[in-house]
Amino acid sequence: MMIGSSFTGFPEEMIRFFLALRLNNDAVFFTDHEMEYKQYVKMPLYDFINAMASPMLSIATDMEVRPVKCLARIRRDTRFTKDKSPYRDHMWLLFRRSGEPREASVMYWFEISPEAVEWGLGFWGDNRPALDALRRRMVHQPVAVIGVLEACQLPSANLMLYGDCYQRMQIPEELPEKLHPYYTRKSLYIKRTGVPLSKAYQPGIVDLVSADMLRLKPMYELLRASADESLSG
Image (cartoon, rainbow, N blue to C red; front, side, top):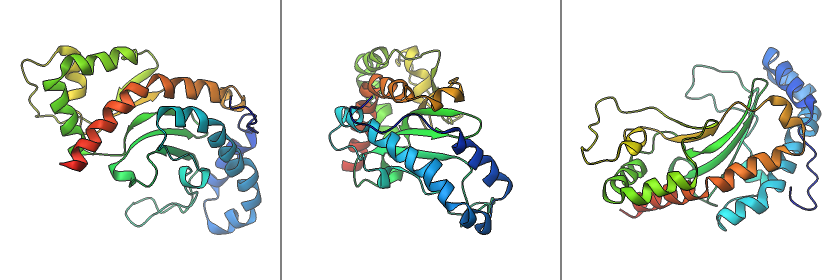
């Protein structure tokens, strides 16, 4: 854990707050319990982000690590969703290049809810230009891309590839089989699953998350290069 960090694990009261908000998702309840949100949700997540700052900056010096920029807002944007619940009953945070729009970025993320604690790396949503650039790298530099997967020890039992696939996208005949699961992705992210929620209550969650983030550094650099290529083209 980062020396001097005040993070001691997420309080169980955080999960109790999420569950209560899930049952009373309105402005009256949130206003009445806003101090609980700040004490049990916002500030522990800020402490966690500060504890993660050193490993994240060792991955990329331009990584955004300011808590106010990394943490999602508790208030949801409901303009384009059928679910009009005004508040989140879970929280997530992002580490990505400072100043870059979320939709064009490669990001590490962490999420905690009453059901699970998860984290990973990938693109935000469907980033076709960046994934097309990644596909070109798979075709023209397959050995290098496979080397990245091997450096990250992927696939792993608990770090798994996720994301929707194009159903009709043809895979080049010369593409190594190991790259097939990546080639047809419409969206792409790698996620750690199977972590007991009880781990989040312990300060060691910082070590678990940072170890995975550092392990995935070669994949971050590959996805980052693909995104930069798509932006420059």
